[in-house]
Length: 249
Image (cartoon, one colour):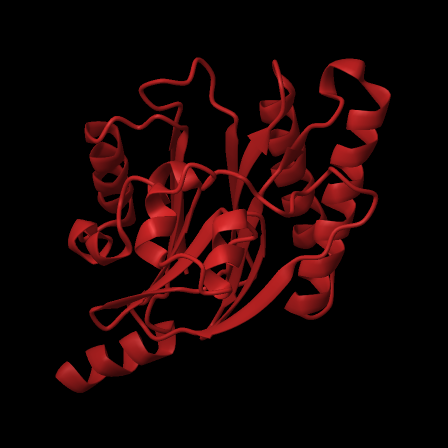
């Protein structure tokens, strides 16, 4: 697995309340994106605490990915919630979280809020995560279309956030990966400015170039919010590469 990320405060916001962390070990890769909310400095405190604690717990914990992800979410939520209770300047803060834990040919995706995960494979793009937002609920009820949701005045209202309650429930998804497949994690600063169908055209040969292209387009369109992108790519198994090289000799 290969992984990289980038974040930017955008064109309008005075500070960056997004945070991301990446981790690699034992043939696995983990990416996390958090988009904080709260007055003053609270949003960036919430996102930083959540992302760091999530990675710390999951990277040190044995067991299967679903259990590790759920436990990491539980302890990250507790860390943010306790800080919001103990620090008056952080009262009411919270954050979204989307994470991808990939190993070999399987990725487990966990999300809370409206930060997203996309699966890019064989010339197609699919949103894996499901937004916990007011407009997503309206779309599910058939009251508005996905196109109307993109410009709805309440599109930034989320219905679930990490750190605002004592306990939190995340949604878990499983994605089968093939060599060359990519997973894109992002805050809504990207997804609000770049349409799903445009994501493939912005993919470059390297993950670093792809992240730069995505960020550049969001900035070109005004980037009223912070923009964060993490990209993971499934590489061909080393033994397969060795076999191909031997067959060519």
